[in-house]
Length: 250
Length: 357
Image 1 (cartoon, rainbow over the protein chains, first blue to last red):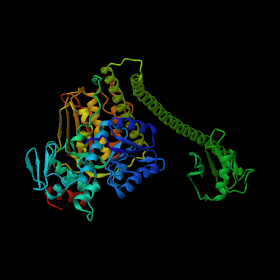
Image 2 (tube, rainbow over the protein chains, first blue to last red):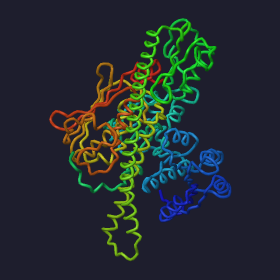
Image 3 (cartoon, rainbow over the protein chains, first blue to last red):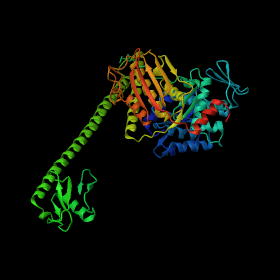
Image 4 (cartoon, chains in turn blue, brown):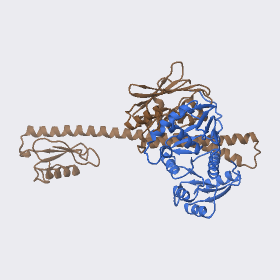
């Protein structure tokens, strides 16, 4: 997914944060429009279209979540929340309100760019025609036409619940889905399904799909928030150089 | 009747009563007057002589610690031996009260001193540990900005890497300080949910991917492990801190073994390394605040394991460490196994049948 030429709205009240984003994203050929308040952001989104919105939650004139909800009323533009709030409840709220992803400050540039690519790819895919016949996620392949799931070429038998869960995560590959979103997507709106139902089925799905379920590579947990099916863009998470300190002995 | 004022905000407190004297208002008023003025009052004195009790101040200082109420038909007319007895009793009671009072004060002072010491060691640990990475970041960033210097590409990479490493260190430190503060202030809510053990372990290992990448890691998590009733975010933090600690104190390529089992109504999680082990006597000390392993040049506030203990205890569990047979250290987390509710049990049953709901 190319980032060049995409128009991004940066909603952020901290001038230094905007300055850093402007420089870093600008160097990737993105067109940056800045808004320091909720009011300014609302004016921007109603006057022109954007390919992506980076949204800070704590704004001087209100909560960024209000903008997310408003945007969802008329557009599917991807929203990535950037927030200093570390509480998982805030993440769940942002995702349930329609944000596509959530990054906690401080974050690395590679991480942000990877999430932006995933979000843009999704928006493009949603606007386009149906999924390709067979989708691939690392060693996992999902053939929806034949309802067939393979890991490294070996067929895996899933229960209907597990299959629906995998399909849902694949629909949103690379994005975190909250426990509630998964419960509704798999069991439907009408049934009350608690988080531990989702967890237990996820544990079984992992046992079938992961080479080592305790070190998952495909079905990743965001503690207290939900799950994410890994997409190749997000696999290169480690961007910190290894510490050069020689490790001392105890 | 004996009334004392041992605690601030609770000036009049009935410790003991004797006989049939009702402790109602007139006597209370007299006692309160004596407590405030430090002079006898009530029956047989010039102050409020109409009261039924004669109230005498107890204590050796200017401010009485308590008031003794004497109910005698006529206190002045009592025979000398009885008056002597009462006076001796007053002196002894005053001394005893004074001693008890001083002991309380000493205890409070000691507690205060400990709190102060804690605060100052937090301050000194934190200010040093915050300033060092900041100093490195500032230095490296200004070096990069310096137009007059001819920085070679390799040096440039070095400076930029340093900034990233130190910023990461700072982030971890600030996170630890925030966690510790929240845990200690009691404002943290433990939001229990039923979570499979492998999910918690998997999340922790994923988070530490880059720190652990060079190591062989074995996990032994039996299928029949019960669900844990824990706060998933806090418990993952606990595991991350123990694993991160192992990663920092043991040789880079040494193994870490993680296994779980049930034992006497508890779920026991063991994280064992092949590092140098614990110095004798350090088994408990390492869980205290601001305690760092010997020879640790990795800067940190010494809060990681203290946070582990606080999290384990906030769940009614505990964490302990010991040296491992054959070398290394074992950290053992013991969580009480709670009875599954019907809903959790059915989720498990339904899932293990593999049937559609």
